Amino acid sequence: MEMILCASVQWDKVGLVLGIIAALAVLFAVLILIVTKVCHINEDEKVVKILEHLAGANCGGCGHTGCEGFAQCLACGKASLDDCKVTSEEEKKEIAKLIGVEFSAAEPTVAVAKCSGGVNAEDRYAYVGNDGCVFLNQYLGGLKLCRTACLGGGSCTEVCPVDAIKIKDGVAVVDKTVCISCGACMRVCPRGVIERIPSKAAVYCACSTNCRGKETMAFCKQGCIGCGLCARTCPNGAITMKDNLPVFDYSKCTGCMKCLEKCPRHVIKTM
Image 1 (cartoon, rainbow, N blue to C red):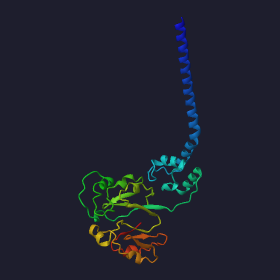
Image 2: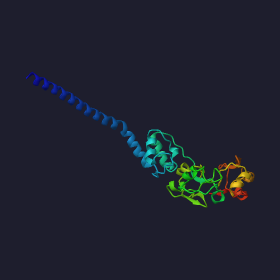
Image 3: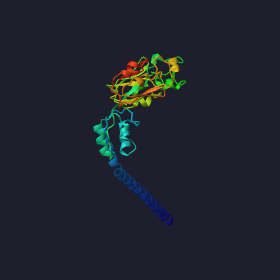
Image 4: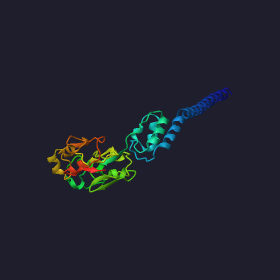
């Protein structure tokens, strides 16, 4: 009888312990739920509101995993509105109010491929392999003799969310009227050939090599030779030569096109 009573008492203790553990588990679950709701509801609502104002291109040009990832980073102060080039200035102002930051409108930009090579640039070898600039660049640094030449593999065309880029004669060409300056093409280009310039720009230099004239002529029929004729011709002093390439000060450029007319290699292009 005593053994039965002892066993009964022990089972009662076990049941009590299990009951306490179960109660604590329920309590902790409720507390976790409450904490989650209290701590995250405001941020979640903020993310939703930010998303309502973002362009929704999901281009990845900002460096985040689509607009939702960008919105989450904006909500917690880990991203800048300047990272997005697609959303309109009006919508950015509304987002700035939501996240409590000051916002000033940036100058509109457009992407350009700073290369005129392609079929005009000499190859080092005949490439056989996977398509795309990333793969082309992995094999011996690309097939072009020019180390800054567009590889023409079309990786930029694949990531462009608005189909603004075409490969023509082995070189990426951006349609200014379609480009939204998201930056996705810039991020994927292994050569860094694609850059942003002001949308108001009339001309740009379609070359990225810093080699001297004689060396450039050895590997490209249209590469800039750094002659400086464009800089000397510009009536407004809008062009300076740096590392054998013309650099444009677009605040001074009037679009007179005299630099384009004088360029012996036809490297300066119109927008």
